[in-house]
Amino acid sequence: MLQVIKLIKDIKQRIRALKEDRVRIGFVPTMGAVHEGHLSLIREARKENGAVVVSIFVNPLQFGKNEDFDRYPRTFDNDCNLLSQEGVDIVFKPDTSEMFPDGFCTSVVPARLEDKLCGKFRPGHFRGVAVIVLKLLNLIKPDIAYLGQKDFQQAVVIKRMVSDLHLDVAIKVLPTIRDRNGLALSSRNAYLSETEKKDALCLYQALTKAHSMVNAGIQNTESIVREMEKIINTTKSAVIDYISIVSPETLEEEPIARSGNVAALAVRIGKTRLIDNMIL
Ligand code: AMP
Image 1 (cartoon, rainbow, N blue to C red):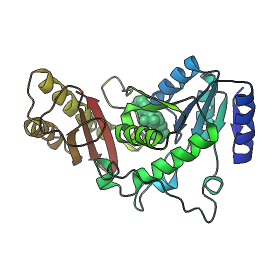
Image 2 (cartoon, rainbow, N blue to C red):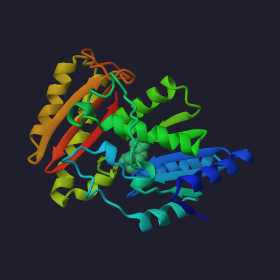
Image 3 (cartoon, protein in one colour):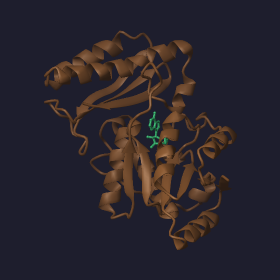
Image 4 (tube, rainbow, N blue to C red):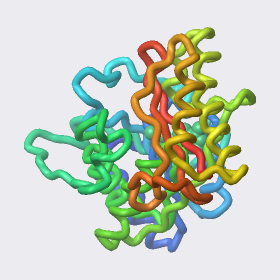
C-alpha cells in the first residue's frame, strides 16, 4: 500500500522505523508529473531495496523569476496511481512551507559546476537543486538514490556534493528514457504542441550526429558542434541556448572530443526549454 507522507515529523518517524528494522531504502527524488523516465528509476529502486521512497516536490528555489514554476504540471492523483502500480512504499510530498519555513537561509553552492552549461542560463538553479537534494537525503537517509542521465549536470552536481560532504549514500545514474522517435521524456514535454513535438526531435538528431561523428573518428569539437548547430538551426521553432562537448566529471569543454565525453545541449522550442545529452 502506497503511504502518502506530507510532514517532516512523520517522514522522520517512518524512516526511523525502517532503519530499526534494517530495511534497505531506495530513493527517487522527483518533481512529479510522473512518466516512464521516472518509472525506470523506480523499477530499479524496487529491484534493489526493501523499501522505495519517492519524493514529489516542485522546488521553488530551483526556478528562476521568469521560469515555469507556476505552470509546472502538477498531477498528484495520477502520479499516486502510477507509483502504486510500481509497488512504491512511500511518497513524500511536503508543502513548500514545510521544506522552506520562514527564516530558512542556508545554501549549498556547487562552486565551479554551477556556472557551466545550464547554469549560465539559469543562475542559482543548481544551488536550489543542491540544497533540496541535501535536505531530502538527510530526511530519507537512503542507501541508494536513483537519478536520470537526462539531467546530466544535475547528476554531476549531486555526485560531487555527496562526495564533498561525505554523505552516506550511493548514487546511481540510469539511462535516459526516450519515446520511439528519440525525444527524451520530460514533464515539460506536456507544454509542446504536436508541431513542436516534431521540431523537438532535432535535439536527439543533433546528439546522434555527434555520436556518429566521434565513432567515425572525427575529434574536432568545433566541427562536431557546427554540424549539430546546422541540424538545430534548420528547425523552425528551435533556438539554441548552448551546445557543448564536456568532460563528464568537471563539465569542462573538451576541444578534442573523445569517447566517454558528453555532448549536451539546451534548445528552446517555442516557449519550452528542453535539455538533452548523450555519452559519446
Ligand atoms: P524531475 O521530476 O524532472 O525532476 O526528474 C526526477 C528524476 O527523474 C531526475 O533524476 C531525472 O533525471 C529523472 N528523469 C527525468 N526524465 C528522465 C528520462 N527521460 N529518463 C530517465 N530519467 C529521467
